[in-house]
Length: 470
Image 1: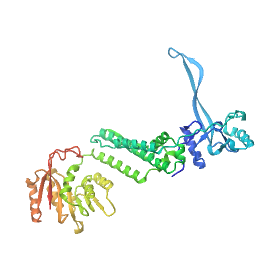
Image 2 (image 1 turned 45 degrees about the vertical axis):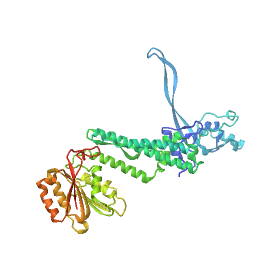
Image 3 (image 1 turned 135 degrees about the vertical axis):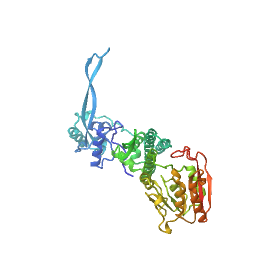
Image 4 (image 1 turned 180 degrees about the horizontal axis):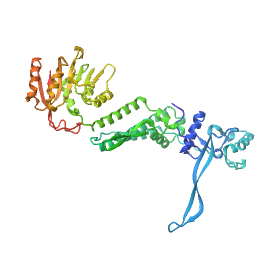
């Protein structure tokens, strides 16, 4: 772990520098790595805590301070008098703690030379030896960081992140904007919590480290919240727009960079991927693709029950949509899952966000019309077909019939179908082919609201059933 985990501050006042002064001091620290304490004060301020600038040292930075002076004039604006003030900007020079020494450790002659020799360099008012404090003032001592307190703060932030990441409706442009804003807020809480937890681990490992001695809990929490913030851009969504984070940090001073370095890169990548998937999925809700009605989770579970054990098997999803059945097949142990998707935006979603368990598994997807494809070799045939075909113009039976040509002998097909499809004339040829292949078919009626419940990605009142062919 890096030795420095603090913002430039003044040890005689206990306050952090702010504004443009921070960057000037960070530049000084970058150009001189020996300034590891990040403590800077003026020549006179160091005297008040019993330290003196070493002879020959030059100020490491010129800083600016703003304020107001009363003019001593009044003007009648309303009943009563108002004192007018004018602003001023004053420059002052500072020295790092490493450029100073304890007064008692310096020879008397060097002590006097140091006091007089550095006054002009410090650009301060005259400082006389007799103005030095008679007794050395006690230096400001900052309490050590408490790892337990840091972890308590991290736990609070984690709880806030979980609340922000809770599922929210995104079925309208306005709701999407609100949900994405909350998710971005949750991501920041989660990152800040991870930084504080890592910092607590570092304090436990070395209670005497600079991080433990120079930070307070308040400073650590503030810096972590800032380090977790990134620049944003607007994503347009119809009449509404919402903010999404870029990869450019909003605060990029040394303490922020060091805190971000404490984050686990794998965890950060996983969080970013999750946020990207949530955003992409939310945007799909605003699209009106013909026949795009993703399979609800309850229906997916029912299909897996009828599909049997998928461990080590090959699976085909002919109309993959956003990949609910594809991902469920991998989660159930499938080794290879092939999928087709005609809509380019959905095919891109599949390629980006389907999670393949490990290197022994594979997802083969094509942006193509499944009805135009046939297995060119026996090797391309699969053990199980899981499908949710389009219902428009009675297409479902034709899609199921075509999918049978991809099934290995002894395989099984489970498909979502419109209720009552078996009695329609369009299903006659499918029934004939099933009989000719020596297969059997079972129809399982699903609940009336299977695609109309809260877990449905796109709701429809169409009644559905499952066709199980084996």
